Amino acid sequence: MSAGEAARFWRSPGLPGVDLLKARYVTHRFTRHVHEGYAIGVILSGVEEFDYRGARHRAGTGAVVLVDPDQVHNGQAGVPDGWAYRMLYPSVQVITEIAGELLAGRGTPYFPEAVLSGGAGSRAAALLRAAHSAAEHGDDLASSTLARTAFGALVRHHAAHRPARPQPPSGGHAVRLAREILHERLIDPPTLEDLARAVEVRPFTLIRAFKAATGLPPHAYLNTLRVRQARSLLDSGTPAAQVAAEVGFADQAHLNRHFKRIMGVPPAAYQRAGTYKTPPTNRT
Image (cartoon, rainbow, N blue to C red; front, side):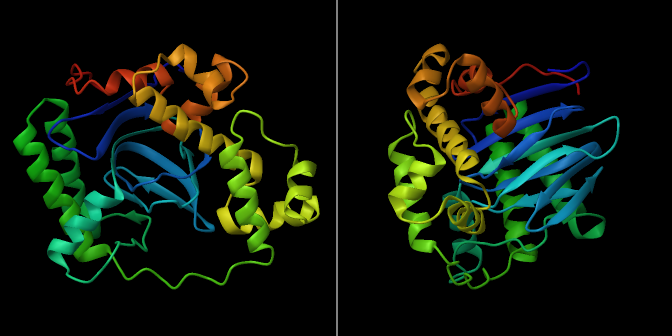
């Protein structure tokens, strides 16, 4: 990690189903990736810049960032000094249950705005920051109360009905088959040519259709699957040194690089977070 950068990922018993990240990044860049759940956070200082839903967004100090599940995005510094933030990653179940309690019949919440700043997000930003800080200091009652209140406010005031799904792009059947093959062959994936041949389309046709359907080309999608499987193995206690080979990365260095580009921390740091220990206070 570059000088001036610090990142800590952990979980708290007071916030089941929610991962936590506190970080300051300067040169670190998140690759294009997706989360299974939501990514919700508040910028403490600086500016984060990210591409999401076909547009580039800038989130400055005090802004709230909202990224929906399975939506491709990246992230990097928007100013030379980078940015610091507190992020919460609640599962779909956590947010959907809150929405069900507050807004019966709404279904899975969808946040049309990626960045809330000024008056629109100031109360939510304060609640998110307080909930995150309480979790950092081991105050389970405060963190759970504040996080639920913050998530509830976001659902009430900033969620909308999910837009109708677009019609599957041309080649949708081939993409579905290709995704199934990649899921089954994490360790020994086919070449692009072999993958295209298996789903009976031309290579460039497959690339275009795959990106239209998933937001990622096949190789990037595969790395996302590998990181997701690596997380499962790390959560189950598999030593980080053994995970690379079990998910198909060439070596530990490749796992570390791809894992950090998506998760913001290396695998060993991620695994330490699974013990539900409150992290030591560290000023950012």
